Length: 148
Length: 148
Length: 148
Length: 148
Image (cartoon, rainbow over all chains, first blue to last red; front, side):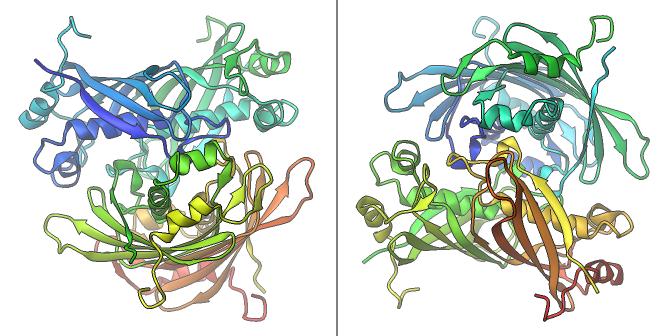
């Protein structure tokens, strides 16, 4: 039985915008960091995949639904799961929840974000089948249809 | 008859990632800049809307399909249109095309990105009806269903 | 006897530039994060200082000497000390050392960075004397002239 | 007689921080963009230098004095000059002035920033003599000692 990958991010001083809330594009960075964490079991981690093996996981499709803003000092918990794997691609879902701010209720739903990434040779910039170790790393976070 | 808003962005040195291509989250920033350009006809522009009137346009939903990577030095042309307006929200579509790189064909399709933004009081962080001038500014770029 | 504040940062995928090394301006962000860590003993931390008390620590002078590049996957250890405190300002020094990369020697000196920050009322955007708790938090990392 | 290179930057929505002012590290990015502009006369520009010739200009020393904050919507004018050239390195000075904000005086001095950059082979990550065309491009903005 698999479980979501849990990633925690504390909003940094520079992540907000002129409206005083976390800039929407930064949510994708936070989720990308969570994906890197899902691959920590690889030999050399996500860093080794990119720098040694010259394989990447560029996004081919992303979508996000934003439910509540984040502010400086908020802490957000990301539950990341794999919704589908195909030959080259992986569909990831990230559920973001705010876990702390004094004076507000905890556990507020913040956003649901989906990334579909494709295993890509960085030299050829062409999709390739997922290597076994990458597939296995993601498999640990796969939800069954009933879970998702 | 309305026309798309045309925005040009030249990829900057810091916009690429460890894979050597523009980091996927940065595409949303480029589109946000294009939205700011669509509001230049407002008194004080987008800046005045945020800083003087304390109204913002945070994203409530975004999605992106990425077709081709961008590299440092590429120039990308964004055609931005309004697909729908409701009482508080605006659905924007951005078609990105690479317009120049020596040695490659011009005009390659890069990405299609959609932002749904909601007019929001930044003090109350609550959706409000689109003010007339904001509605009129976006109206200039509205496509009819047949166009989109 | 005080000791440096130790902060560890692992280079993230998006922090490199088109030259394949960490973009120089990002080093200042990493040091800013270290400063936030130095203030964790404050009630509410650096976040509380900014968001609740509306006091900030904007830089009035910074300088950096870069000795070696960082790449994706590198881990950098920052030793942060306070070199001087005046009525409103604090002079911080950050020594950056690379602590891990397979195939290279550990402990390479990367950069020395100095920030002078001034305690500032964000409403008035005017310098103010350092509050006692902020002074005490920084005092823990003060080096004597002989140490620095 | 040479003149400064003039670069104009309009503060973008995402460039401010939780204190509501442009994040200090972003000033270096703005100056880096000005440097790219100084090299526009190169065949292929700064982009060609990096991407085709695999030569870069990483910073070896930077320093900044910040005099006044910038906010969203501010427009800043950068006057960039070359203070010195050596065999491999170039010392650049950037004077930043705020040129527009309704309700405030124009022309406020914002910051003085200095970058020393070294011409570097990106493959070997080793300093090399400035190529003639790069030297000539910077020469156009060199101030005599009396000017600086």
